Length: 173
Image (cartoon, rainbow, N blue to C red; front, side, top):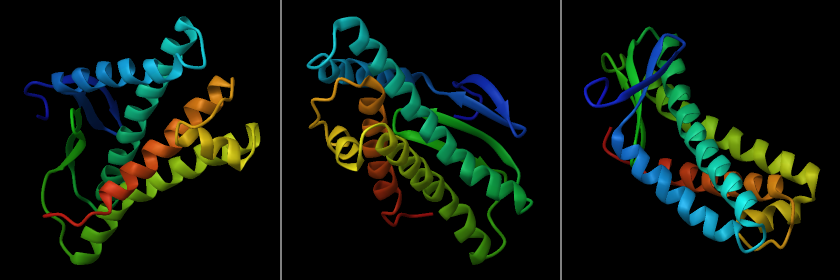
């Protein structure tokens, strides 16, 4: 991780962004299963396009989550060695530990706050397109809507809420 086996994608805020080869396994599996779901409502080409968009936007959500941690760490004078996306999500590697519990808390909470904002934004935009019931139905894959954008926004709302809940589970620092 962090340059060894990962493929460099870019630098954002001076932070190296990379992807591990295992990321591709999850990417293609996600595209496959989302495509199966979307094909129930859309033609093959549209379903595949929606699946690819959904999967890539999900990984963008994970990247933004990790950038949330990284930006707060950098603002607290903690260098970031890089961010790598891999099969279980993403990780931002700090050069050193935090100096205080307060800084640790701010760095730790930054990612979930970003995830909450993404989920809220997707739900809000979906509600503007349809209504809150329509995007909620799309979020739990219970929508007969023929609006592909609404389906993607519903999926992103759902997956970001799951990501948020997963990240709120206490774990070893």
